[in-house]
Picture 1: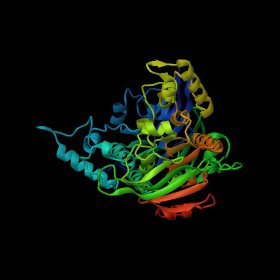
Picture 2: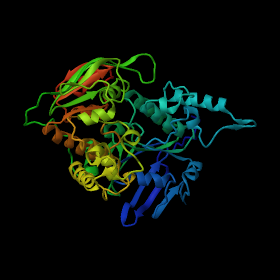
Picture 3: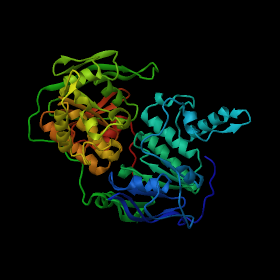
Picture 4: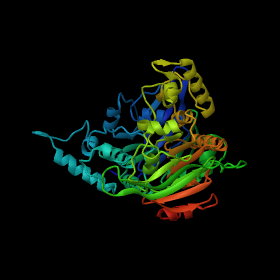
Length: 513
């Protein structure tokens, strides 16, 4: 990262929104928003999905124009015809949903569209050198020539961040940059942010991880229903202040559901061993055993690389094991395919909903009915009335906010897209549901709705296993908390455990803030 001229005027406003509004027909995504971005400081934007955060960031970064209002850069009104024009003025954005080319290597992704040229063509050696320096800054040991598709999601997020840092922007917009990062990777990113601030770079930071964001913010802006509801400096705010202005009142993520008897063992994982999918020659899950009963909710916590995702993907038929077995309601289903597991009542909600959970070219309705297609299809004939009934029922039961079954899946907020993925799997009437980071990239309100939905289904006998890298989510609806470390279970707790105990069992350092 090259030096950017740092200013001693820490209160200098470099970019400002003045009465910015954006309308799509009769829908007003933004309603006269005003706020300032200060040189060398972090302005954090809080708000639920659909509050207007992404729309505002797209306007600031030149992706879309405002319907009315002004963007002021260095004291002068300015308009951008494209994101590349905004980038020419030093404004870059890291999008929440990754925009990498999976079939290309890390180096080529970072310099795609702005290759370093020399007389004989692209200077690949210089691009590789700069990529290695960026990876060193981010403390990530990634070979520049590694294909992106071979990286885990957190590493792909690091590459996305590196690409934005390589432009040497003076205003950097980060939309959920830590959604797939481990705790240690978040700390490295925060060090990078503080270093950028010291060089005069301004950061606009969007995050649903409220406590995490409070560690680095200088100014907080809260959006609700397209309007700014609050603005304050860091010294004036706390977690309760943010939640109150975001959703109107304080609430938590729920508690373990009670008032019913749990049934027999629904799923038994017996001595499962899963080799590293990248072929590194070691086991990411090592002889692990775990069971969940009908109506029970089990949370699996662990740092990135603990083996949580690989465990769930193996149980659901996506990855193969080299030892052990999976027993579903007394029947050995080890080695079955994903479709066979779904047929037998074992379903998975994947971590990456965009890549693995949704079909972007399909409507909300078709995404919801996709996993249940066998229920209303016979031979070459489909009962569209039965499909429509299933879709309508799913939208109602899962509380999806949409214009209708025919709406484009991309028109939904992140939280509602996640509900579609969950609703799609629940529509198959499963006995066991596995959810890998179900709250990734969704706001506190949508998160609470998802956990409430899972608690309700558990009361009806559904066995639930969900993974999380957020300690607070362990202490919500789970009857049991399993901590994984290096492919094994390191501890098991009841709901009365403390955050410190969970973090210590995972090998995570407990830091007082």
